[in-house]
Length: 324
Image 1 (cartoon, rainbow, N blue to C red):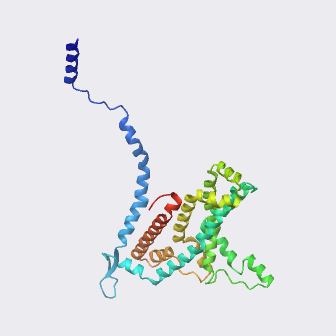
Image 2 (image 1 turned 90 degrees about the vertical axis):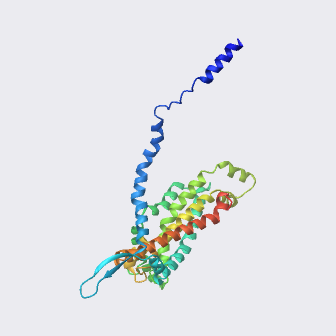
Image 3 (image 1 turned 45 degrees about the vertical axis):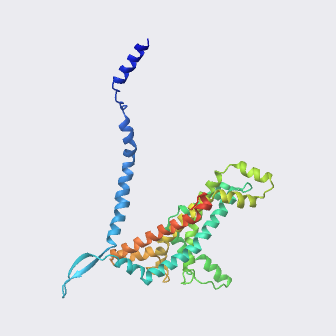
C-alpha cells in the first residue's frame, strides 16, 4: 500500500503542470476601462494639453523684422529665452493689475464666503421657513451669465439711468458714482458677490444636510444653543467644503475678466489692463503680441497654482486632519 502511494506521488511530480488558461473575455475586461477613457483623453489632449504646451512654447519666442528701407521686412520668429518673462514681471501695468486684483479679492472672497456660510446655516436651522423659496432665490443669480449681470449692474451704477440715484437725488443726497475711480473696484466686487454667493451657499448647505441629525439632537440635550451648535459643530464639520469654496473663489478672483471688460465702455475708470487677463487679451488681440501675452498667461497660471498649493498646505491640517 505504501509503495503504491509513493509511486503515485512520483508520477504526480513527473507530470508537468498545465499552464493556467486565460478565461475568455479577460483581455476585453482589461481594455474596457481604457476604451471608455479614450474620448476623454483625446479631448483633454487636443483642447487642454496641446494649447498649454503651445502657449508655453510661444512664451520663449519673439517676432523680429529683418531688413531696412522703405519696404516692410520679412518677419522671423526667434528664440528669446526668458526675455518675455522678464518683460512681463517688470511691466508696471502688469504689476498694477495684480495689485488691483488682490484688492478685489480681499473685498470679495471673505464677504462672499461669509454670506454664503450665513445663508447655509440659516437654511439649515430648524425654525427657518420657506426654505425652498429662499434657497432658489439665493442661488438664482448664479444662473445669470457674468456678462448679463455686469450689464444689469452697470446700468444701475450709471447716475443718468439708475433708479437708485434718482431716489438719492430726490432725497438730497450727494452720492458719488460707483463707477468713479475710487469705487469701481467695489462695483466690480459687488457683481461677483451677487453671482457667487448662491453657488457657495449650495455647496455648504449640501454638506450640512449630509450631517446626521442625531449629532445636533445630542448637543441640544446637553443644553447647547442654536448658535453654539452652528459655531462649534456645523462649521467644523463642513470645513472641507469651506476650504473647497475658498479655493475656487480665489482662483476665480485671479481670473476676473468678464465684469471689468463689460463695464469698461460705461466708464473711463477701467483701463484695458485693469486685470491681468485683460492685459493678456489686449496684448494678444489688440497689439498682436502673442508672445508677450503667452508669457504673461504662463505667469498667471503658475501664480494661481502656487497660491492654491500654499493655501491647501496651510489649511490641510485643520480642514482634513492631515499632518504637514
